[in-house]
Every structure is written in C-alpha cells, then in structure tokens.
Length: 129
View 1 (cartoon, rainbow, N blue to C red):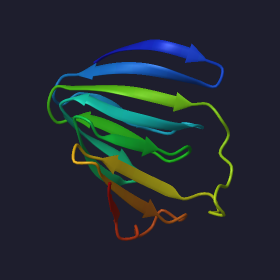
View 2: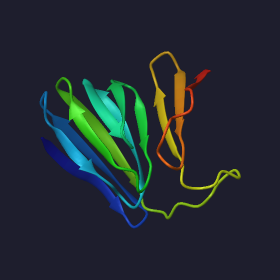
View 3: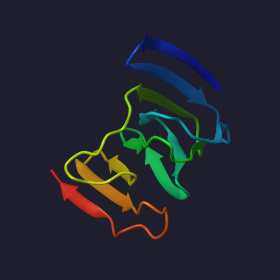
View 4: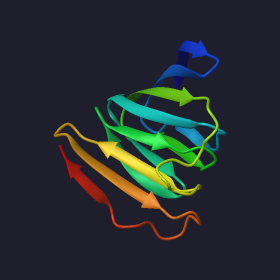
C-alpha cells in the first residue's frame, strides 16, 4: 500500500492511496467525516460493521466516530477526502446516525441508514438521477 497527501489544510485533507489485491486499512475510527472515492479497481469498505462493495467511480461516506476499514478485492486506487469539522445535527436528524452512500456509473444513488445504536439498518433508499 502506498499513499500520498496531496492537500492538507486546517479544515481538511485529500490523500490518494493505491493497494494491491488483499491489502487494506485495518478497522479504525476518526473524529471527522471522510469520503472515499474509488478511482480504479474494487474494494470492500466496512462501515459500522456493514460491508459495502465499492467499484470504480463510486463514493462512500465514512461517518465520524464509526469504525471503518478498507480491503482491496483487486488492485485498487482511491481518494480519501477528510473533512475536519465537528459534526452537528442537520435537517432535524439527531446524531449519531450512519449514512452509507454509494453512487454508481448509472447515476444510481443508494443510501443506507444505520440506526444510532448500530443495530439493524433500514432498507436501502435508492435514487435514480
């Protein structure tokens, strides 16, 4: 695995990663939200215990304080955008909840909401743009 920070500011950073098949980042948490964008290849991203298959062109939200991990299922390249801002309730939704968002090449946005307790996820909401 190789990585390089390409932008680092007080409010966030952008880092690129490249993995060989089978390599990854072990489960950890972060105090800030982050976005993972798959640039090439495929990986399994686990967020709060929920595995998400990620393919080229798709994006996954890694919510603050939720455990997450990445494992390349093929050679895999990604861009990680870290947003260094404390989470605040938005749109009347109490924290903490987990939103797992995946947008594929056909502009299909899949959003999975995991409850605050991390128990059963709600059915996926699918948006076709």
